Image (cartoon, rainbow, N blue to C red; front, top):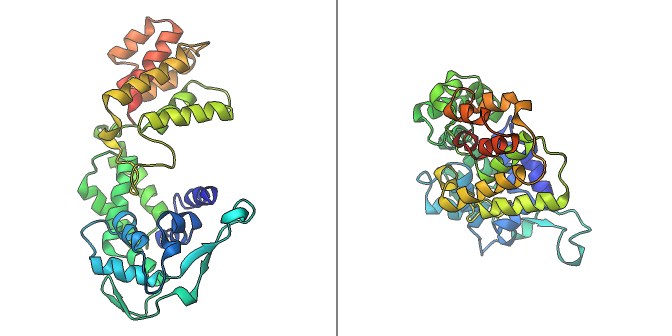
Length: 311
């Protein structure tokens, strides 16, 4: 179930249609189970997914009412899945199903639209709401430009999102080719999360292919730093930014760097001059310090340098 969901996210990473992306997420067995929509039935609507659809996936807080949440839940009644349960859960591939006998076919009003609205109607109205363009664009800016986005730049991306009818690829292509993206003030303006830090360290060191046990150990280490894979503390995921940096997390990062570099044979970063160039350390005091050290110490200090924890 989770493998299928992760595959869905990969396929839509730069989706030409945010609405189609939202629809497939809403109909994925993993999401249906996670937010209880598989328990959403006529007469007893479960509002969990309907609420998060608006709050976390589309418009954001402040742009919908509690009535919208309730009416959205009614429209989504009957959306569930079959397969992947009980004794057959490892044999059957779970798949979305619509159960008409559990669906509320009555009149509904959702985000200003009234009618016999279906689940597909709700996804369309939420995905194409004007505020959704701003909400999604702000997330893209936080992911690719800086932890504290420039709101004027977010508004420009939102306009592209609307003009292209939710084409995430078009928004990203424009953003990643913009002067904003390459501006000096936006260099090293994002704090790397635990997983990004660990993966970056392993790749920087040119580590050979890791086995299952090593990968599990690294995943558990990321959890100690506050990012346990597939298990965020809340439905909205991890806040990121400065939340990644505290005394405990920094100590764990230093321990990871030490384990990767000071134990056993460590690569010499002289072989990877591009690493220092990308970190901007070749002309910094750190760069001068590294030149005077042995390979293992040089590698270790590079991984714990402030520059390496930023993107």
